[in-house]
Length: 98
Image (cartoon, rainbow, N blue to C red; front, side):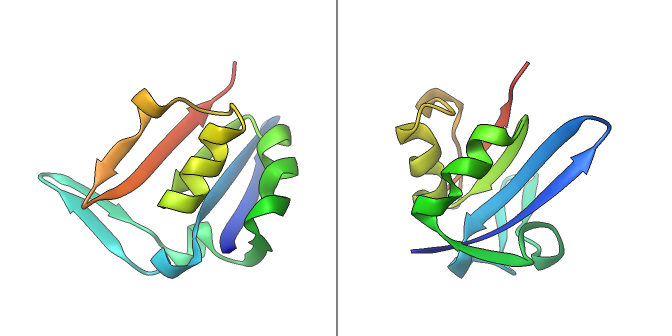
């Protein structure tokens, strides 16, 4: 399973933006909430899901979209199921490590 991702380094923080590749370019809606899975934010690089682990470990912030990507983060202990927001049936998870 391929994942699309980008890593941003800003002011001592490392942000990982990652999504299931098939979601790139989609706009998800839930009431007033609109989530644009923009290639300019989540795209740029592709990686096998299993190889995303090192990016999870080194990031201080993560913005994740998609069943495979979010479930991998949960399975590895980087996030919690109760923090998942479902938008049009698609899981979205934001993680901040203090």
